[in-house]
Image (cartoon, rainbow, N blue to C red):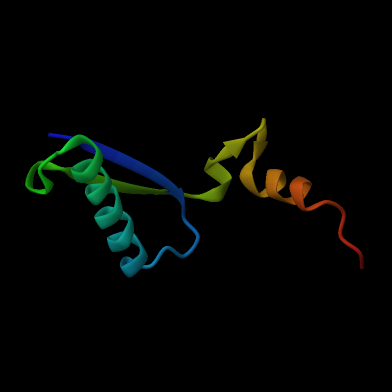
Length: 72
């Protein structure tokens, strides 16, 4: 009975995109581990970008650093 918890930033993942993620994760568990889709649970948690950090920075600051300086 697999349980998978996906955490994504809240940035416009539509219901259709979430359904695709759920189907894809379920299919992967069926294919790789021979798990039953009927007993496979996938939960998607959306996290505000200000509540998500990477590399010691809030995610938006991290992305800005990766993008480099902007010209104006």
